[in-house]
Image (cartoon, rainbow, N blue to C red; front, top):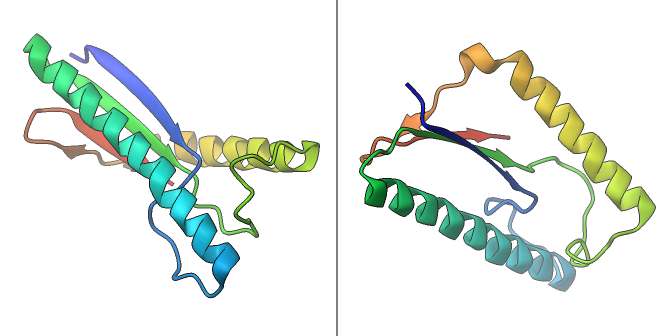
Length: 119
C-alpha cells in the first residue's frame, strides 16, 4: 500500500577515506557539503510526509561510492570522459541494484518511511 516512491541519486558520498594531501582534503570537503544537501532533502521529504499524515513512502537513496580516482575538480568537471565514466558507473549500479531487489532491506524510520541506501 505504497503512496510514493522517491529515487534520490547522490554523486557525492559523505563517507570516505581520510585525506592525505590538500587536494584530497578539498575533495572530501566537497563530498561532505554536497552529501549534507542530499541528507537535508531526505529530511524535508520525511517532514512533508509527516505533515500530510500519510507517510507511506519508500525513499531509495543511490549513493556513488565507486572506488576510482577523483579530484577536487569533480564538481565542475564536465569533460566527455568524466561524464561517460559517471554514466557507466550509474548504469552498473542500477543493474546491480535491480538484480538484487529481493534482497534489499530498507530501514523504517520512526515516521514510517522506508529508506533504502544503495551503493
